[in-house]
Image (cartoon, rainbow, N blue to C red; front, side):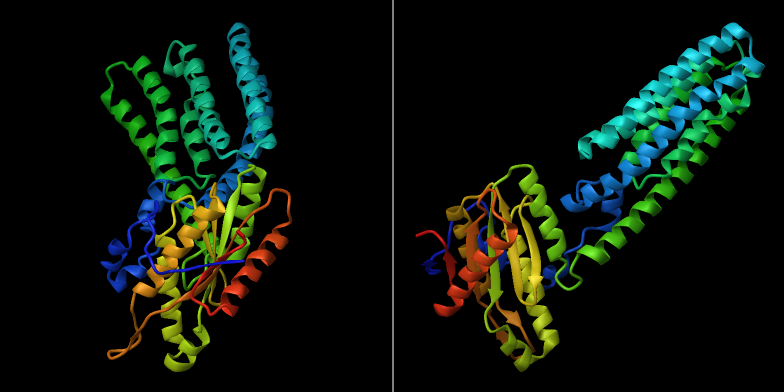
Length: 388
């Protein structure tokens, strides 16, 4: 085993130590994203939540596409009862075309859980019915001859958006895909009656607003449930279960990674001397320091008690050691206020290893845990790796 000295700062892609020192203690607690920002766009969502939300959308999208793939051509029966046969036959071709497209989309989302694929399919699942609506409406000579079911199609399509926990940005994009064909139809049949046009647009806006509200409410509820089940309430880091899920995703994608395990030295003594509230404060500060030295692609979790684990994708052991050393320096450099008179600094014993392709995750964690134990045995406040 190779212990690493912590006497010098390390240059790396992480932010410099001087920058971290300038932070005020109160910034450690700004760990959650602005709720409004999270509702507007998915850019601030964690990778794990993005996959969870995508899978939730995928199941509902599959049911919706399959249902309408069957029902759209069946309702063609009413076209033959209410419209001239030639017109009904033309609409039947359009119905069958839409049905085939929906079947293909249902098949694709059933076979794949790719986040990118789900985004494209959900857009197509609303664009295709909107184009179907545009085509059908253009086959009529006047609005008076259009059956009510076709006139209401844009509003019914808008209502379907409320089934999905989309961001505001995603909802607005889907509404736009429906609104453009809707307005083309309004322009096509416009006869100078602005009041009728205004009423149509107002009704569209009303349905759009309700759909946005429903989807945002779903997204907010999903976020709250996700946080309660996956995020440590004290440190705001993901828990062990989510970390293991992320590791499995890395393995499936054949992405190599290093693992760094931290254990705060003599943490029990802090609790015994200053109390558990002070110990909780130390955990918050330590978690923020660790997270601040990692990149967006890195994964950091509270492993249990005063232990933290960082997973560094596409990172070799030597680079992971430099990262661990930099975090150890940052931990020692930041005084933590215990009371008006007392402040302390903390140190950490750290183990570093690299995942060996094909090995069991349990073996990897046993190896890094043994390395952390070696760091404790060698006197604490050091990094120990399995590089010989």
